[in-house]
Amino acid sequence: MTTHVSKSQFKAKALEYFRQVETSGEPIIVTDHGKPALEIRRVEEKKRDPFEILKGSVLRYDDPFEPVGVEDWEALK
Image 1: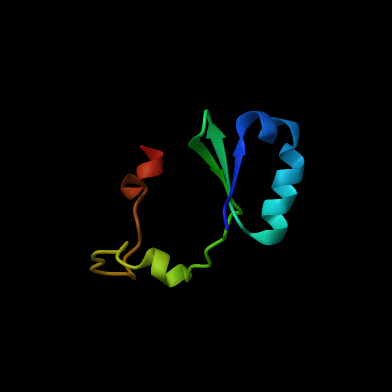
Image 2: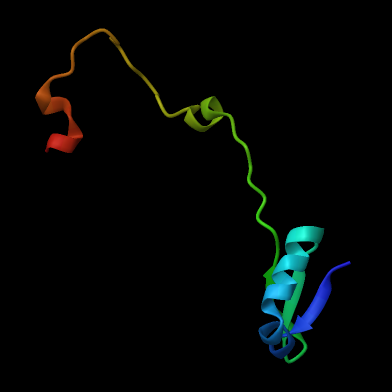
């Protein structure tokens, strides 16, 4: 169950709430005058396959064995 905490309560016990989120994994909603303002939650790292990241980045390469000239490098322009 998600915990709701007012801004003033959160300010007084922020580190305690951070530890609670880290250990339980349950997010905390910080409210402002009874309305949700912020959500504090644990960061989940997504592991992605490097080939999935690069998929579609090379559209066409005619001759992979052809040397690249100095004038072809964008970084040198």
